[in-house]
Image (cartoon, rainbow, N blue to C red; front, side):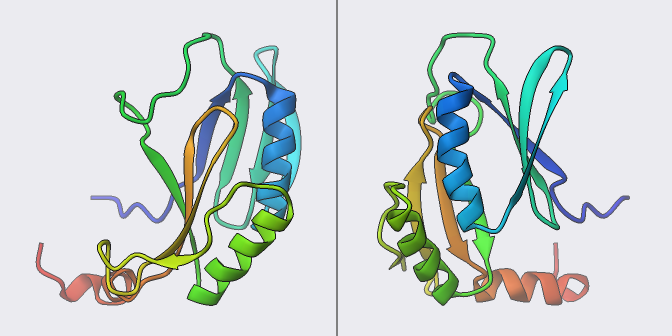
Length: 147
């Protein structure tokens, strides 16, 4: 059985490329992503990428709006190394004009779960959280954990 080692890329369809590009330029620059553009099958694409994966915008082909409670993506959470990284990113996003929540502890999720939440122009819910101890333990002790 193959060992999936990460997410290679995520594609997001957007209703307005210019509006989404402006939003994601702020967000992804704050999060340390780089940017390139390309055309695929006649459609413009904008790719934000870091060492680990790509996040690609492409134009929507339907006018229906995003609904996080319809079948499909509910939200996407980016992980950073530390609680301080969550705090710093939340402040930087806010300073860049992104309506991000203040970084806060969410003990209902996990005792060390810090996050900031924000929404893209099409309503896709985004989150930034710290690398929690439970996730670190799972990573570091995978071969010793029971299924």
